[in-house]
Image (cartoon, rainbow, N blue to C red):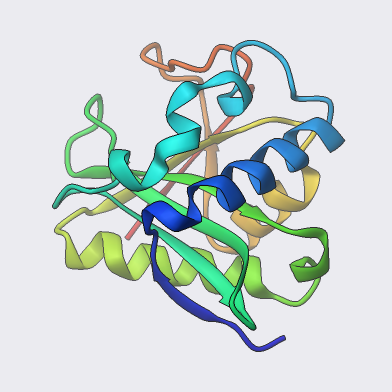
Amino acid sequence: MDYKLRRITPEDNTAVAAIVRDNLKKFGLDIPGTVYFDEGLDRLSDLYDRDDCRYYVAETDGKVIGGIGFAPFAPMEDTAELQKLYLTDAAKGNGIGYELVNFVESKMRDAGFRQSYLETHNNLRAAIHIYENSGYHEIERPKEVVHSTMDRFFLKEL
């Protein structure tokens, strides 16, 4: 599948929020304690409009098919948190998830981060598969975790 990556714009907010919520619902994670109910999800372009964090969308034929972002993870020095890797069903199974992870990791390195942290849920098996195959290793739950529903935590040296 051919696609291009670019920074999120305000016009992308609705499409990205719908992709995230659709995925969470399909995996039984449309519950409190996940980003499903986070009001910021509807305005990601505002939240990621800083020098130390970014969100990128993947699009094909002018349609958003997914996205990925990163932001500093303050509890760990020189660490960025990989955030909100989600794809439409049509975009899954084409290796795009791996490509997005590699892309955002390069952006993290460019921003000066030395580690990538992420949190996910056991229900998101395909995502866990991507993370493990991309060199992430599982760690214990950090005490600072905000989304209480997440139950799997990973770290990777960049």
